[in-house]
Length: 252
Image (cartoon, rainbow, N blue to C red):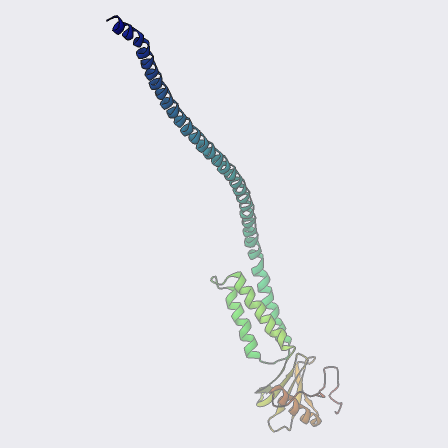
């Protein structure tokens, strides 16, 4: 019995030590689990912190970009406002200009009418009708100033072109009570000639006396050539025709 009790007494510390070791191991495991959980929470917090920091940086970048965009938009708006102000001023100027343009255009039409009246008497009906149409446009409220001005310039251009062309046509020559059909030849704005259909009579318009004057018969061949050239029936050649400063007494 003594031996048994002694053995039991000797084994008590070992049991206590084993229990202590088990408790220590359990506590260590629990602490390790807590540490792992804590580390996981720390890692999660670290990831969340990095994500929040990246979001913050992106937000700051967007704020900076928006600031630059707003600054550019303010400049654009300011420039557009200046352009709008300028356009409003120009519109006011246009209205003032239009008020001044109509009397100017009217004077241009009147000058054109006077010019045609004292010019060589060629294509009288066509030229007078052109002026009459312009006068009708002057009193038409549906016609803009721009269109009216364009039409007047167009008429001036047509009259200007007459000075650089050679033209032939058949028409009526009126001298007093006598009217007959003749061939007309216009040389720019310098001279206007006529020749009867039988070629027996030639003449020219004398701007000084505002009348038709006869030409010597020696000009018949030259006028025939001029009429053919104007009608593109002959190649251009030099024509010996009288000019306003040349007397009709000169024989070619």
